[in-house]
Image (cartoon, rainbow, N blue to C red; front, side, top):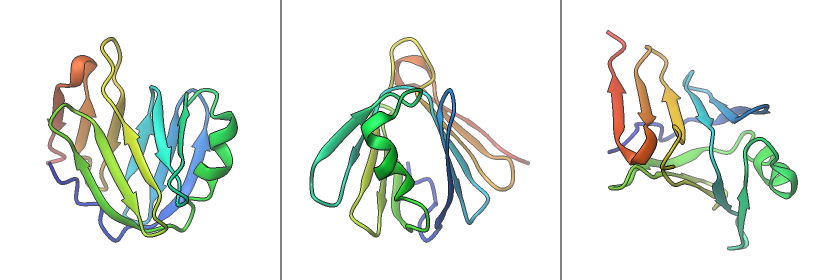
Length: 123
C-alpha cells in the first residue's frame, strides 16, 4: 500500500515514549516499537524509540530530508526511503501497535498487533 508521502520533507523529529516524525505535508508518523534505520553508508542501526541512543543523531539527520517512497509491506511493515539514501524500516509487533500515520485530512493508517493494517478515512 502506497502511503502517498512522496515529495514531503521531514520538518521535525521528536523523541518521547515513541519516535514522532512530522512532514511538510502535515503528516505525523509515530513509531512505537523497535525499528531499523539504514543510513546512507549502508549500515543498519536498530533502535528502540523510547531509547534511540546511537540512532538519535541519524534520526535527527532526517530533518529537511525528502521522502522518495513510503509504503506498507505485505506483512504490515513500514518502509520509508529518503533522498539522502536513508531508509526507515518498522516491522510489525505481535503485541503492540508498531507504527501509525495521521494525514493532513485526518486519514489514519495504523499497524495493529500482529501486522494487520487498519485504515480510517478522514472524511
